[in-house]
Image (cartoon, rainbow, N blue to C red; front, side, top):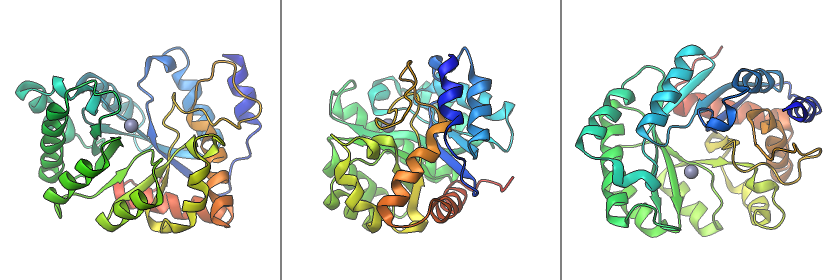
Length: 278
Ligand SMILES: [Zn+2]
């Protein structure tokens, strides 16, 4: 879509490279122009990306993408709580095999989502336990999703401590939830939700409270197009080239320069996911 390149080109790339730690690049909305999306991301200074796997098939697609772009794209392998009911013994074995792939840098996304309960809560808890165990077995961090299930989410993570490291992806919660996450040792993933003046304004005041070495940046594309993006792509599709826009909002909320935030968040992402420096 022609307007994407125009919009992305107007964003100034920071002097320091950025890493998009949560991009659903295997999503079919990128099927037509995935290479152009990747090229625009690189032009915008997004030098590495972690491609989110949310189902067994989606994780296999994420691994295929990572294999095709070595050193630039990496994958997670996991089953999102929406699909938790699909995680039977056979698919768990398949997931375990994917999780051991060298391109896979985290297990997930996994966690709990009681907002719509697309899988029954008991199945979600089972799938979450199994994936935390898998992460410990393969020695990789977890990429975590939580919605409307904070207390049980924390309780399960506590049960498995200290056998996991990980990131709470797309953090949109309260100060209390942020501090509970930080106390558990989680890193915090911030998306363009922070650019939404209706739903995300509360996050601005929380940004200075996240230690720099635990603050990671993500677009969660094609979802969560930053609301204040100007000009806006007509398709409403989010893409990793918009990560500098999100980084600028986070840097401003923290009272630091974009370069300083880019440096710390890139270092933090490489540390958590053991990414090489290209
Ligand atoms: Zn998620």
